[in-house]
Length: 104
Image (cartoon, rainbow, N blue to C red; front, side):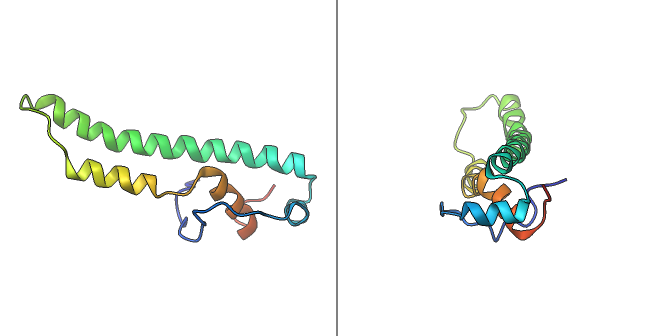
């Protein structure tokens, strides 16, 4: 399951969410819901890291073969900026729960 699809509607800023609303959606108590969302957030975070590292590894391989002085790579900087703009994994998991994309 790719967690990185359709993250356009995930808010980048932190917002307060009603605990009772989360309990109604998940049909579990708030503590169980938070624990499950934490596990989902960890999976999302690991997937983001793996994706970023695999893309950055290409740049490392190119720089390793090039014996010239290392200079700023514009593509690498743009990639890093793109990943900095991705919302936090907890926000993504909560939004997926609110949208009904995941079931607890």
